[in-house]
Length: 272
Image 1 (spheres, rainbow, N blue to C red):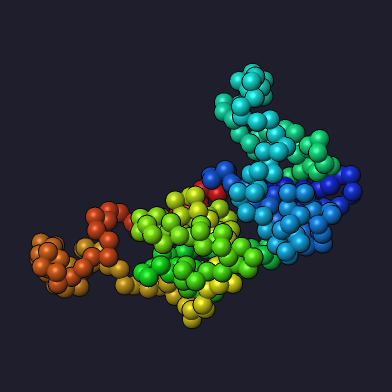
Image 2 (cartoon, rainbow, N blue to C red):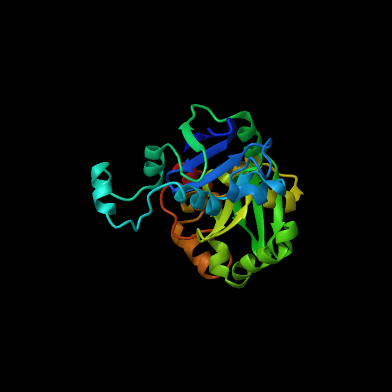
């Protein structure tokens, strides 16, 4: 993950921080709370008026694309070759331009450390998410709280109707629901990498569960024996164990497991 300071050179004010997650090619923008509708980037003025300062990835990429050469430019192949790029890369072009645009005085520069206001907000980002039965998500957050969220009852103020419409396909399609995973930086939960739910919404809407991620890890470590360990525990052969599964006396949590088991959230974070 790379991050950049967004600065308004014309008005001499710091606007916020741009976070880029290379694995997902996702852009998230954290705006400073000192902004108002006049000092915020025009695209985000409405959000700031509502007190929303974390810009989701679908708007983050739009802001970036306003400031770079479009991929359908007629001479794009020559431009890529001139900059020694093998493929179109939004972040590379944004860095080349310094984030400058003719429409405003915004620019970007790389940061060494994340500002405190970003670190504070990220405490409510997701660490992991588990789709449970009955269309409920078990959400683990950076601040070590765990919340259970009923998707069918999610509300988000003025955007309730749009939220319900976005969630409807998830509620109607089990495969889509089961595809749920943590998005870039824990900023959202995503279904099939196309329908996103902000972590802040899940945090506000979820019912607190007296459980921690450490508790969950402990349960997994101590209560999910593999086939060999299960055979030893029962004092039987692997063939006997397979027979008991076939008879319905034992139900495997996950079949055909080979090698180590990993938490999906850890694997996804390793790409960032």
